[in-house]
Image (cartoon, rainbow, N blue to C red; front, side):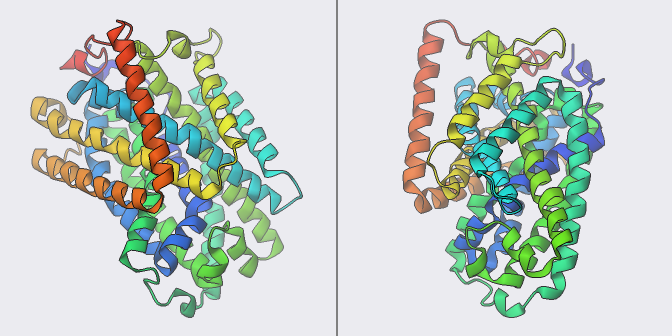
Length: 445
């Protein structure tokens, strides 16, 4: 059966997809890493946001074309697996797992706790543990429940960010924004590298492509809505935050530092709950939605134990896979890693993941032109190839810059990826790993 018609009756519609994309992007970058990026990029942090988004868009178009031509689950693994190399695809998924479980989920959970602490006296780690537990349970009930929760959080999030931008605009002092590039070009690029993964979040909608209704049309449409919306929110929020309190006050601090300067207690409370807390929870929820898709693909290839993809009879969700995601993120949450290093660790996995997907796009448009021609928004073979190749170059440069800024974290991440390579080679040589054609993507070639 063609993958283009296999899953047209999914649970995820256009609004759901937009909510998942915005949740993946906004929660991490805006509320968890704006302060970290400000410490690196200084007054040019909003330029770092724009730079990161520019590089993201280079890869976003080819990714959207792949997702629309071959809607499947775990697409960021399955596309490189089918069109590039099973080994490279596994390493990319493994590297993402290291970054997500060791950096992403604990970063979001800890930041959630810090924002709650700004309202009441609590232990941020305990609160973070509670929110991880809550969304683990939500996702046990199935993607349709998780998607409905995501939409509700998304509406409140956009409203709260609007309050922050509109309420803070009169408090902006242009003196706080000069000199424009206070840390120079290197600082701008390094700031963009830190922000890159969380700007990249919209790309992960292709991992639920098999659950999206009419994915050939819906995936490109959702990205066309979510990306400009998030870019506008990012730049406006960064300008207001830095412009109102200055670089020194915001460095490595949450956005509530800026909100305290110009919002009334009532509006500040709404911003913290509807903005910061809901944004971070949308990211946590979206990660729990997406990660089981990778586990399913890896289990299909016999690269992880099949029990991780086993679904329960009542909800049809991979309870053991979700439990593993939950356990690993909890262990990282209680670790002594500082929040800045969690954000940096998150960046390496995102940068590494996109390169094999871009190589897959370049090969796919040559091998299956008719599949792309069926996509209403197809930009053409040449444009897809040029954008994908440009994204590869930019991602390589970002990786080098980020590694230079954080050599210890990079070495740790590379060591764990090397461990994954060893695991893959042992498992495949013992005959347990995949060697069959991909049943979803390659089955339609």
